Image (cartoon, one colour):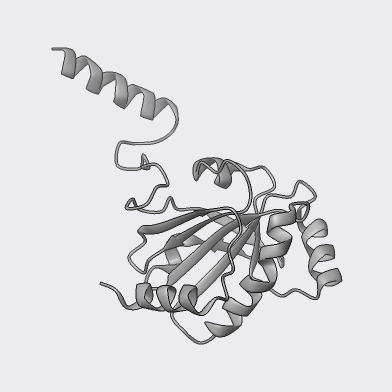
Length: 171
């Protein structure tokens, strides 16, 4: 009887949030499916994570005001260039409240080119349970989070690129 009551309460709670049991997402941790999201890029075009299945996706949460993020970005640019034409997609998700203007100004001043998305209300970063920036989730071609990296990393280091290339081909 207790299990029945718990199940009814779970269904009621999910219904109240607009989710069904099938739609409820697991936490964004290694080994779980990456929570789907749709965010706009700098041109206003919506980008949905689930449409990138089949590719290795680097989901990086960052901000223009974050020193470790600013240190990490040149290596992300190099990684993105090294992976050009491969089964890879980088998504640099800015949590800047200044939105598009803040990111475009930062990119212009630093001569940076990255596929940036805007999470100005923080909904996606909350869904992923980020505790700060930078935080990065490596999502395999099947849509599973294979690695969570808290803090900055040299994404252009040969060993990092090799590990990412191995994940692109892993089944």
